[in-house]
Length: 161
Picture: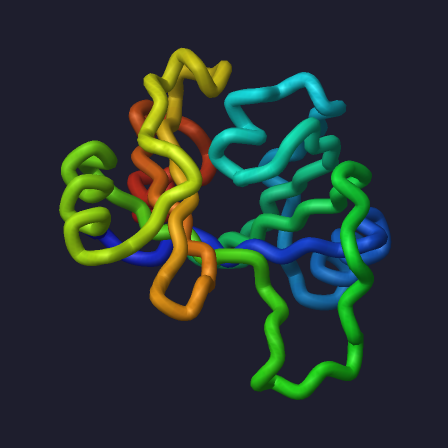
């Protein structure tokens, strides 16, 4: 069962600048940050990349989350800051689910393609979430995320508090 949209994600060439903008000018707060340096094959598998290296920050404003990535590898292509709204921009949106395996099978049968099948939570490091990336018919990326520990700061259960 899909519970709702969890977050929207974007990629930037300057994480510090964009985080400063969102926190100082739009009222977001940083609730999580991490990085990896080509040493996370499980993450690469989800992302559909090889030897990726990035910094990542999760921002929150009210009940809205924004996930921001700054990739160093593979070398990203710069976006057009003046692109029309019809052009590609955000990297994906995330749907919070309660049974990632069932949703994977259901959406796979519906024609959605995935970078990989769901991995056990322990493979992702924290044991607190399971996640996969898939693509809609136009190729837009949708993440399915099952939060196994409702006490983590960006779970839907925490939104209600």
